[in-house]
Image 1 (cartoon, rainbow, N blue to C red):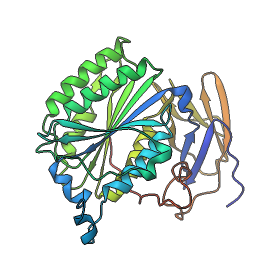
Image 2 (spheres, rainbow, N blue to C red):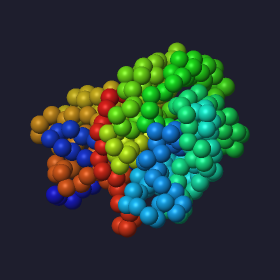
Image 3 (cartoon, rainbow, N blue to C red):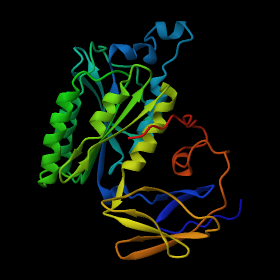
Image 4 (cartoon, helix red, strand yellow):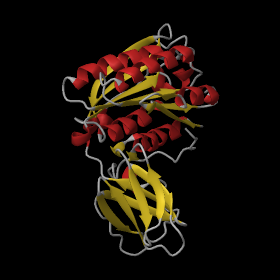
Length: 321
């Protein structure tokens, strides 16, 4: 591969058979994003957390959730305005309870233990998560937060989908009226018990003056969860209110009407040597790198977040949202 020149405002560019993925630089201190991570604590997750205490030392069963939680915490902290995330188990106890783990820093992610909630839940009730995050976010706004993001992991069918949609409608009205900054909910399902049709109904809802509040993906296995979160979060980031992509002959390749995401995906014609991003009255031309090969399992913008001693998760199954 030839020498790759990355032009600001891009942080990374991949080219595979003319399909380009370009990642824009992200400055969490400017965007003011405040992130929270909610992990399913229902009874169906008990095997994934594995045995606790003395039992944890007796058998080969291991905690599949903990390394994924550490990875997500460290990664999401790079997006957060102060590198500190609210972390909690949800769907605990009666199924509608929340056990707050704490406000955790990404720099210390590898030191945290995630053995599971004190009381595994008897159901999967999502509305308390939304209420908890909105209350937390309102407080964060008084301290400088300008945008919100709640990442929610589940392995089950959601028991109160209608309530979730109704509450989301109220949140969207507050955003449209300027009483709340823009925020998003990222929903990641894991395993065969997830009702993806239900998740699509929640996430495809559009709200007047706001558009989509939700996005989702489904992973087949727990080991795929963290990467799907990273991909979704990158796609959720908004860099500007809109923009255009041109090829090296001035032809428009893609138009972003309402928002310019942090990750741009588009196709260039054969023989194209560069592309240009037009945003905010400015133009930025990026030479196309040589075509990628399959040696990398993750995009560079994800891999760059890790030290050599850390193992990034395997690439997961990507679903529409």
